[in-house]
Image (tube, rainbow, N blue to C red; front, side, top):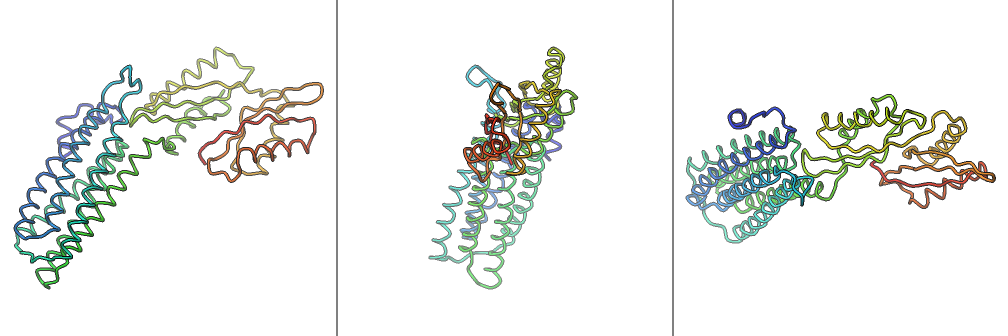
Amino acid sequence: MITLLSNIFIKNRINRKDPAVRQAYGILCGAVGIFLNLCLFTGKFVAGTVSNSIAITADAFNNLSDAGSSVITLIGFRMAGQKPDPSHPFGHGRIEYISGLLVSVIILLMGAELLKSSVAKIMHPEEQLFSPMIIVILLASILVKCYMFLYNRQLGKKLESAAMAATATDSLSDCLATSAVLVSTLIAHFTGFAIDGWCGVLVGLFICYAGYSAAKDTVSPLLGQAPDREFVRQINDIVMAHENVLGIHDLIVHNYGPGRVLISLHAEVPADGNFLALHDMIDTIEHELRDTLNCHAVIHMDPICVGDEETTRLKALVNGYLQEISGRLTMHDFRIVTGPTHTNLIFDVAAPYDFSMTDSELETQLKDRILRDNPTYFAVIEIDKQMA
């Protein structure tokens, strides 16, 4: 159904990196989710009322909350697609994450309320009625939720949308929860064991877990999570494919919402190269990054001496000391300043965030190792943090 509707309503639907196409998919999936969840709520509410089942009724209201979540998702995608303005020069893409967070809160609240109702049902059980209509409604609900899980997961991956991925997780948990309700209904009918309240607790736990998972996936990008490793690798491959780029460092990725990424990095270039030619190369790389990865790139050139034998020797020497401390450490921006009494070795060291030594401990140990080799070498070190 989603494929058919997207063929009808979404222009240029193949170009999913386009923010307008993302917005259209989000609105379409939100509208379909509202319709399907309202249908499920109506059917389950009738079945729960007729059978006097708290588990079925609670599951019905879970679907009603899912419909409300779909409304928030739809509005979120709509607002996230607004163009940049003077107050928000990088657009409104993070609204998609905020809408996902609101959905998570709603899911958690519904889960808590269901747990409360289910415990009351355990303490004061009531007789459940049984009819084939109830079984048909529950089976239909399971099939619909399986379908919603599949299309949300598929589009979540294609659009790289945390909000859709969270919705897919919610649909899967609903499918499992409704299966538990179906099992409790059949057991109560054929054995007489009243496990309705206990299944309601199980459903509540599923809902709470779905809310927690959704919240985790939406809070991380709002807080500024580390970029995806594959995305970093693609950046490195594009930049390093150019002959006069000797290395890159200080890569920073700013995520302003799906499809709205700003990156900055330092590219090492030969100090004796033609400045105009190097500048043209950097412009070309920035355009390649924009066209290939759909991101805005700013690149700073760092000139590196490549023909000086003394600089090359000392760089190799210091890098050896660095590897003795840990193979997880790297060095960049190495240069020397020679004076009448001593030589300054100036460089940056990149250390992972989870490195066992503090910055001061690492700096002291490296300086001491350099001085032991030659007391006339003074190290001027800047410690940078990076992903492991």
